[in-house]
Amino acid sequence: EVQLVQSGAEVKKPGESLKISCKGSGYSFSSYWIGWVRQMPGKGLEWMGIIYPGDSDTRYSPSFQGQVTISADKSISTAYLQWSSLKASDTAIYYCARGGSTVTYVPIDYWGQGTLVTVSS
Amino acid sequence: DIQMTQSPSSLSASVGDRVTITCRASQSISTYLNWYQQKPGKAPKLLIYAASSLQSGVPSRFSGSGSGTDFTLTISSLQPEDFASYYCQQSYSTPWTFGQGTKVEIK
Image (cartoon, rainbow over all chains, first blue to last red; front, top):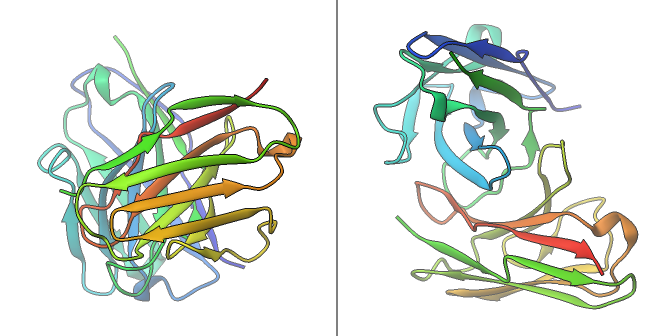
């Protein structure tokens, strides 16, 4: 059974750094693109970026380029989303999501449970 | 970036109603259009992929159509468990983009 299990909720202060994780199981982690999606409180879904764990090829949405870093460690089947300096506007639920073996043309077929990040002074 | 525009942003309907949600892409995306359902407090769930293919386990009252720039999600007979938000998403090119969502509420 394919599963994406995300790390737990975080409460941080503005300016702090953070790295959240998403561990995949039940499939060949290295062979599928895995992405991150933001959902701000009461708002819709925003695609942030995606990584291919096999070779760490990474694509970012222009809206998030330079604001976050996406990485993956295929040896432990885990993808990461990190911030170097959080802002209050980063408060949101972050979902990891599995794409396909190609970066385009395929849907997101599995989602993590979401990680709530709260940034408040 | 390809912009995805959904309409309506919300709608009220009764159990048994036929519901249609539309999604328009800012350029042709062939049939690389997917639909997701999201219930409050839950992760989204894939309903339809490649514009018209029903994901395994999804009830047949859900259907999708369209190609190029115009797409439709139809629920043939709305059930109580269908009250949720629905999003379209293009996977034709990166950055992938979502529509702004349609909230289906009980009338």
